[in-house]
Length: 125
Image (cartoon, rainbow, N blue to C red; front, side, top):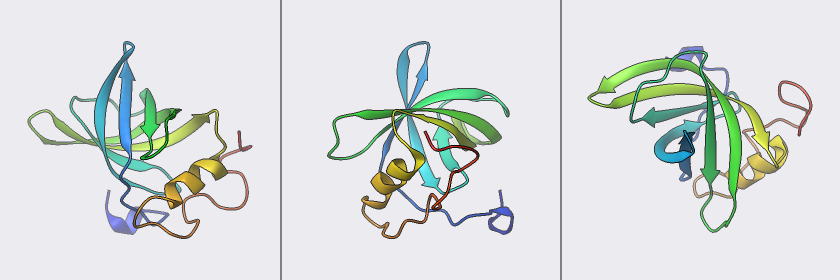
């Protein structure tokens, strides 16, 4: 997706991301994240409109954050590498606001730029 089409700024983030497929966690590379979604590199192909279960693992935090995401677009990047644009549909056990605060505590991020003051796509939590 070109930068001109993006609706929100994107930020790099050092977060471990796991794709839960058939109860097995598969590591996924988080390329960047924004208020509108995130870009990731997957080791196998997924389809647009597919719903995926992902877990975020933040440095210096014990718990993982479960989420449901929708695949927006997929672009093949070479052998067994797929650039995938995702929309976070649901965060489980954490509000969008608290998730954003965790993201802002990561190196390289500062102000609350991921989630606005009000609800995102409906009620928070």
